[in-house]
Structures are given as C-alpha cells and as structure tokens.
View 1: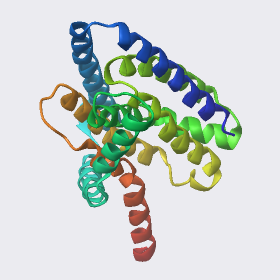
View 2 (view 1 turned 180 degrees about the vertical axis):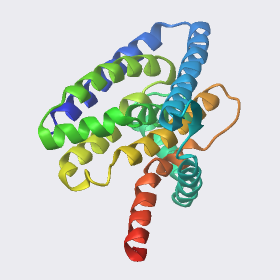
View 3 (view 1 turned 30 degrees about the vertical axis):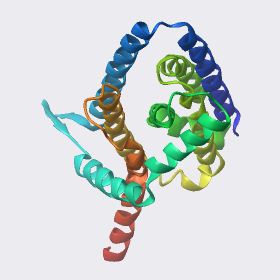
Length: 246
C-alpha cells in the first residue's frame, strides 16, 4: 500500500544526497549561475502547470477555468498560514537543524529548500493519482515514474539550495502515504476537478518560488502552503450548500 511512497521518499534522499556532494565541489560563481538557472526552470514549471490546469479550448476559442477557486484558495490559505505563521515554524526548524543536525549557512536557506522541494514534489496530479492508485489497487507504477523524476529534481535542487531539500522527503511520505492509506474513503472527494484546482493553485506558488529564488521580491511562501488544500474545503462547502438547497 505504501510501496510507491517509500520508493519515492528514498529516491528523494538519494538524489538530494548526491546533490549535496556536488554542491561541496562547485565554485561559488558556478553555484550562483546554477541557482539562476534552477530559478528559471522552477518558474517555467509553475507557468506550465498553471496553464495546463486552467486553460480550456472550446468551440475554437481559448479560455480559462477555476480562476475564482484559485484566487479564493490563495487568499484564504494565506490568511490561515499567516495565523499559524508557518514561515516562522520553518525558520525555527531550520535553526534547529542547522545547530543540531547539519551545517547550513542560515536557517532561511534551509527553510527555502524545504518549501521549494516540498511544493515541487507534492503539487500535481501524479502525487495524488499515484498515491490513490497505490493505496486502492496496489499499483505503484505512477509513483515509480514520479520517484525517478523527483530524484533528478532533488539532485539539482540540493546542489543549489542545500540540505533542506532532503527534509522534503518527510512531507512527501506523509502526504502521499496518507492519501494511500485513506484512499478508499477520500477518493470521492479528490475528483478530477479538485485535483486540477489543487494543481493550479500549487503551480502559482511554484512560480512564486522562482521569483523568490531570483531575489525579485520577498514572498512568505511558507504561509501560503495551506492554499493548496483549500480547493478540497471549498468543494466540500459547495457540496454541502447544494445538498441543503437541493
């Protein structure tokens, strides 16, 4: 039931570990250039994910869908994240790991690695559909393919962002593992529409990561993380409203 998720988490650690080894031997000039390249790739991933999730083509005309859900999810999710102050929690975790477990330059770089990698590895249909398929039918082919992709991404990210990328294996394991374990019960809630809305919202955050990595503007992306799950809550509220009024 958790085979695919275990493989996925393990390969993230493997890829991240190799990336850390590469980071130690790279000159500062190459690291800075590689960071810029990774930032552009992250922005492209965010844009392509958002476009594929919201773009429609009907009757020869391009349009968009789920933009209102995305806006509500980002606003409500960010408010919730600010109330919890997830960003500060991540910085505190970074401080702890820097002092006790690893030697990172600062807590913020560690936290940035965690947030960036977690979003990249958890956002998208492969994570949700693959975990559901693994939990309900025991088939982990989708997660196996995702694991290989995540391994390569972890290598690249760790070589620029540092050890925080490895810690992303934990939320990936918890996120996908939980979906696999309770897949039978939540399958009806994670409809194709909801998954698409989650992908759209998460892709916007991924684009924001690229902007932050280029130091264009300081974004408190950690506090925006709850936005990814807001489409599920909004869908439940809509279902309840339809049940009451219908």
